[in-house]
Picture 1: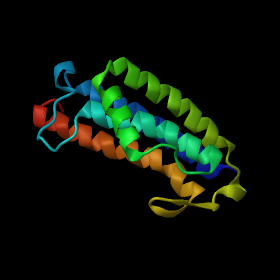
Picture 2: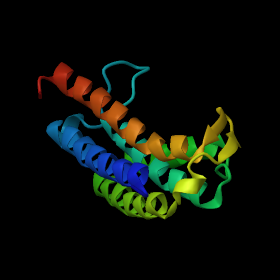
Picture 3: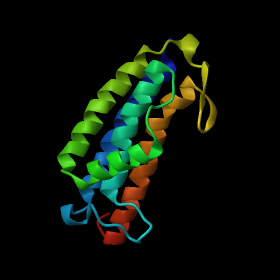
Length: 153
């Protein structure tokens, strides 16, 4: 079945994005920028990361080259997004998810094992395609943990 992996990843990534938003919305608005410890991340920060990285991953897959810009620039962008209007985070997540889904669907089966060098070593396009799903599912769990501390689950 052609594009089976691509369609699977589209399906689970779209569901993970929806579940991530549901997890965030479970937390009271006044606690979304709260963290359980000085070194812990807020729920808004985690969703901002997922929104940005969905778009970055689409760019990486499309260009088949690693992201432009420094890690510090990424951190600044994420902090600004997390500190702003949550509607902007949701809008960016939605927009970048649309881009990501289109790029994943456009990758032909014969390119799935194409590799590229990343700061994390050599990765195949199929591995990179799966990252947004993994990242969103991971952060859904982190946000649900914050919700459990707050008694919102």
